[in-house]
Amino acid sequence: MWWQDTLTLAARPRGMHLVTGELVAAVPLSGVRVGLLHLFLQHTSAALTLNENADPDVRGDLQRWLDRAVPDGDPGFRHTLEGPDDMPAHIKASLLGSSLQLPVRDGRLLLGTWQGIWLCEFRVQGGNRRVVATLQGE
Amino acid sequence: MWWQDTLTLAARPRGMHLVTGELVAAVPLSGVRVGLLHLFLQHTSAALTLNENADPDVRGDLQRWLDRAVPDGDPGFRHTLEGPDDMPAHIKASLLGSSLQLPVRDGRLLLGTWQGIWLCEFRVQGGNRRVVATLQGE
Amino acid sequence: MWWQDTLTLAARPRGMHLVTGELVAAVPLSGVRVGLLHLFLQHTSAALTLNENADPDVRGDLQRWLDRAVPDGDPGFRHTLEGPDDMPAHIKASLLGSSLQLPVRDGRLLLGTWQGIWLCEFRVQGGNRRVVATLQGE
Image 1 (tube, rainbow over the protein chains, first blue to last red):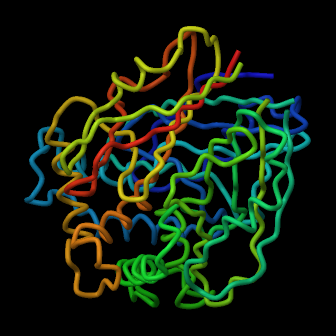
Image 2: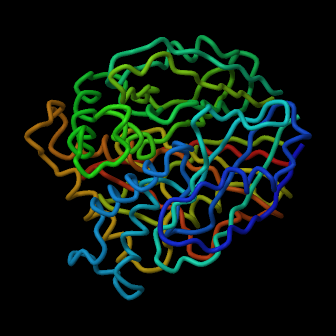
């Protein structure tokens, strides 16, 4: 069984955002006994990652660590036409990755107790973000 | 053909650990002519990565680099209740990632000569770690 | 439907290289209505990542950022027998990852407008690189 659709995540401010519920609600998981869900972000200045789903300070701390490791407006960057946050966004995107694959069992994602899906928005004005969701299983 | 099970890796000390043999032994690869094995860690303070399977110094050097890049007890962190190694563990987990997908051919993983599966334990007391293994193929 | 083959990317100099066209040409995507393509690099000193496919400065800036974050010949490294660029290559490989999974629709990869597949060659003399391509779908 294959299902595939392109989902749209509404524009969010720069930062880390929990989107587990929104994505799960848009995918017909209930028909799958065992399978995999692939989530693929069609962008190069944002990322999808799995991390802690409870304390918002984890999201802030990870964002601040990345902002320090890859500072806006680093004078070494040559790709600067799209603004001081653009090249850092590309670097962070490759560090965290643009896709996730998650196991499915009996109609539910097999996430750990503390795992949530984060949309990592690295641009100040990132706009809507498209996610291609592909579900396969039996 | 689909097969899925949750494997348990016994608690290991903080550091990088080769777990290729242990994971391979627990998965019925022999029944698959061509396929994919997905390994999914249900935790947010450890990671799975592929890297060099021979010299233990590679594991030590990667661990030390991460410990320097994301230091324990960084005074900028706000998520500190679970100890000085907790927030760094979350950051390292997103940098390295919590899942792997590996090609299968004629009952064997198609790893390169020098590739091994590492469990990266970022907590001092991480406890057992659960891995959901999903095998598909024909 | 399953298809799997090992592709060889010819040796490239240290740096980031766009390989989307070369890889796509080698995979029989046209027979797939909906599916996934998995690309798996059988090496631990190079990486595959998705990033911007237009301005070569993005590739140079990401390379320079990584070279600063993980410097050649860091005196803290113990794994030094294979040269000053070897241990940094292993670290960068785990940071960026060695595989990609991409959605397929109506015979084409569903990449975003600005997304391209990069081969990240971290060694000065990396040689040919092998990629196991696994295509599944219906």
